[in-house]
Image 1 (cartoon, rainbow, N blue to C red):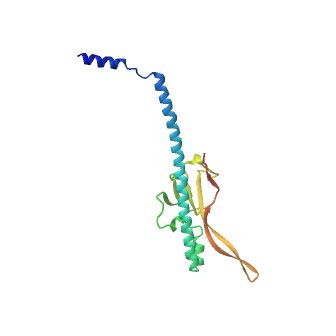
Image 2 (cartoon, rainbow, N blue to C red):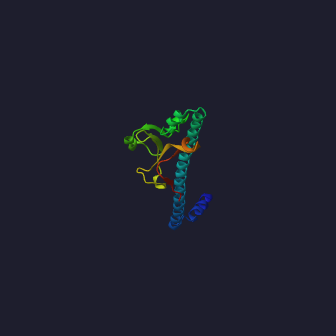
Image 3 (cartoon, rainbow, N blue to C red):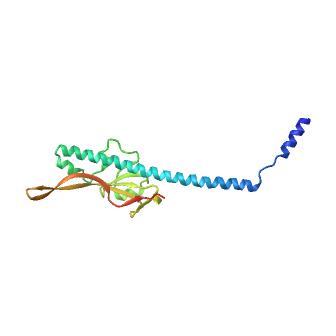
Length: 180
């Protein structure tokens, strides 16, 4: 019994945390959580931006390969047919966030963070998820792309003649990702 009472007095003699100490600990944890959440949000924006740029790079490569294929074959008609087409159709495997072909009037129902081809305007559209980090004149915030022809001049018998020298997938409207 003597052992029991000596342990009990040791336990009763221990001091607990004061309210001030608990408030300070909670405040520190809250500040750290706020910084962590902000960093996490920025990482999500970076993932979206990088994913969009990656998809564009893959599509630009596909456009270039298709151009080279038609050019080597002397298929001028095939080259001209690629202008204003859906660049996603040139990929052997489409990105998982590609929704398909839609009319402009149906775009309001589509989920942000996805690609779709606007059949009315013949443009590939990316619907931005993190709109607070994206600048454009367009509403809703989106990035639109098209396959444009690139022409060069060729001097032949003192006459300048334009010929199709390439195809370029480029933005229709200016946009930029904001990095804070």
